[in-house]
Length: 115
Image (cartoon, rainbow, N blue to C red):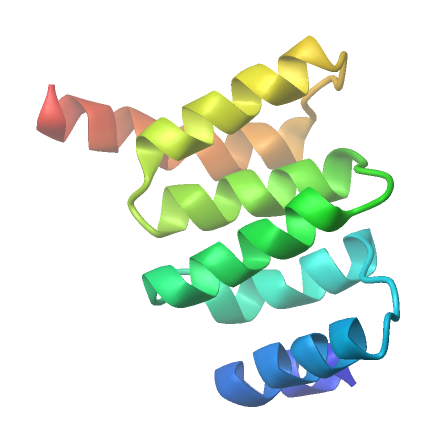
C-alpha cells in the first residue's frame, strides 16, 4: 500500500498509511523507507521529521535505509543533517555504495553556494 500511494504521488495518503501502520505496532522497515523516498523529497519539514522518526525507530538499519534518509536531507536542502547522518553511518561501519554517492553529489553544489 505504501508503495502504491507513493508511486501515485499521494504524499498525504502515503504518510497517513505509515502512521496507521505505526499505531497498529506494525514494524516499518527499509522497504518502507525506500517507498517514501519518492514522496518526501523537497517536502515539508513535518514530513522530513516523520521520515526521520521512522528511520530512528528502525530495529535494523541497512544501507538502503541510510541512503534514503540521507537523500531526504539532501533533497530537502538540509546538508548539515545529511553530513551528520553520514558520519553516524561511517561510525557504524556501513560502506557507501554508488547510490549513496549519487544522492550526496548535490551537496557539492549546496556547499559551493553557501560557503
